[in-house]
Length: 284
Image (cartoon, rainbow, N blue to C red; front, side, top):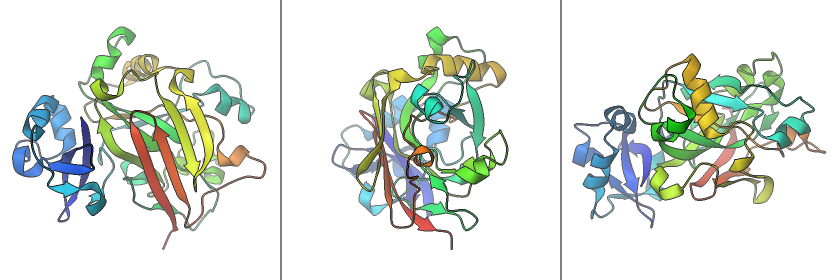
C-alpha cells in the first residue's frame, strides 16, 4: 500500500495511491477518526486504511494535488551522516565507529514535485539521495531482531545541503536545515509491497544525468542497527523518520563541483519504493 499526504482544498489529508496514479482520499472515509497519516500510525490503524480503500475508485489524481512531505510534522527527523563507504572516502574521512547523527526540522522539507529553495545567503546547494524509514509502533531499546516490526513504511528523501553553512560547525545543523531545502516523498510504501530494506538500489539524477548509485546493502550501519542505536538514546514514536544516509557522488566532491540551481530537476529513486522529483527555485 502506498499512502501520500497532500492538500485538498487547502486542508491536509492523505490517501491511498493506486497503480495508475489515482488517489483514494481517506478524508471522507475515515478522516473524522484519523485526520492525518501520523494519527493513523499512532493508532496502529494501517489495516483500517487498507480496508477503507479496498475496491474504491480514485477521488483525485496525484498530478492534480499539492503533495506534502509524507509526514509533514514528524516529532523527529533523525539523519545519519557518512553511512556509505563511498561517501566517507570521497570526503577523505575515517570510517565512523558509530552512526553519525544530526537532525532536520519539519520546515526544512517539502513534498514531491514541490520546489526546493536555493537560499539567498549561499548558492552551494547540494543533493543527497537517501532512503527514509517511517516509524510505526514506537519503542525504546528496540532490539535489532525486532526492529523491522517497528517500521510502518519506506520513502525517498533528498537531504538537500547548503555546504558552506554545513561546515560552519562539525554538527552540520545549519547547512542541513535551510527552509524548504530538502524533500520527502512521494509516498510511504508499506514493507509488504517493497521488500526488505537491504534489497534496493538508490539512484540520484540531476537533469536526467545519474549522479549517485548504490545498493542499500552497502550501508555501513544497516537498518536494524540504526533502529537499535537511535532507540537507545531516545524513544522512537509513530511518525518519526530516520533518514539512512547518502552514497558517493555528491556535487561538492565532484571535479568540477556541481550544485543545484534554479530550473534544475533533481530526482531521487529508490527501486521498489518510488521516485521523488523536485525542481529548484531561488528564494524570493
